[in-house]
Image (cartoon, rainbow, N blue to C red; front, top):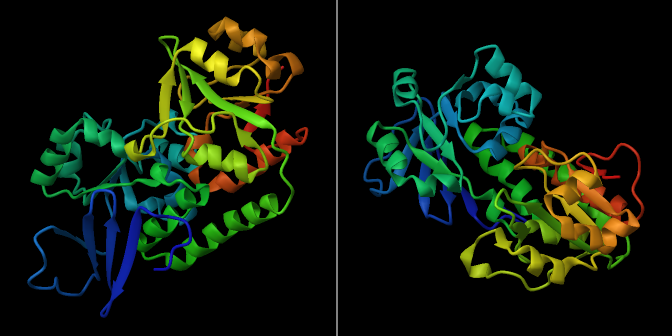
Length: 337
């Protein structure tokens, strides 16, 4: 499969309808075998065989649900690592409320009895599972393959979107995945056709222990800011080889580096966000001295941003308009007053 931006997976096709999926960060290989086809003999020991159709999936990686919904593949998911009220995706929430998808526990405490008794065929996790290797081991002992998605490690925003092709291949819906990806690419092309503003942006979150969580400079969020015509305020932050997307810093260090940023974007994904600037300053009093606060250029992400991973083009469009004064009916950003 030709890929334009994604660097952390590959898809290869073989005669007879066999498809090989590889997650390149961990080197895991999965062979999708057509429903009535034989499993090839003499396969390498590390290749995990998955028979089509792929059903009864235990989906823990919340950023993937958007892909399954857009691909019309929600019926392949039987178990969720998120409760119904935790979903901002309407189709997922309704499926759980209707009992079509069952809550099967968080990544570190799955309900083994439930998923084994109901015939789970595949667990799709994110990198959080690396903190609980015993869970992966136990799932595999029960004959349930574990697939980790690494979309958040893509450095280009559309690399993250392009993972829809990976899951399109898993479900046998490659054409639909190409169409979905093409729509977001078109938005990107429209936004990046305009000239740069070079106005600076800080994207951050205040942790419960008073630290400031920011994005590493090589992360996809700073890249989105750049593509939208702006400039991430921290131009050389973090260590790319660690593959981490965020890091925590002391408030004083954040103050020193971001006080003169033209715009502040508060990341609401973890704590549900804030409703106005006063509430934000309550979290960190030093923010009152920031240029963006004084000039009224403080924005917040909507709570559903990270579950809508296929709408990165629209988030870039929001950033584009934010840098140029904003507009009504933005998708994932709203101004704080």
